[in-house]
Image: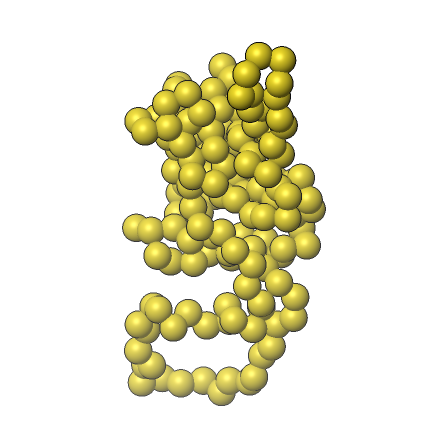
Length: 147
């Protein structure tokens, strides 16, 4: 998977979201409960702008009159028709085995770790320019997208 720097980590506050385009795909990046999530901005139902929807917790009930609210397992609700998806797995709340949206790995990496991409396999060419050491401070959000 290729890694793409999409923003400085500080640009995404707790409870915030960013819509970014990576390799032609519109992806929503979220920070909820101190964790980062990234999913495709396309609802499986009718292609609605999923990542513009509300972030919800889960309401669980073991029996009538008793319920627990779990904010630690966030759901993303499509603004068009209310279909809900697990932010971590992309699975829908109503049919998790067959209806889902694409989740993407997302993490925070130090600027010094993303200056060069050792996975590209680029070969040093015959023409070389003078280079200077560069360092990067701070942390950046990085989304991984395959092919």
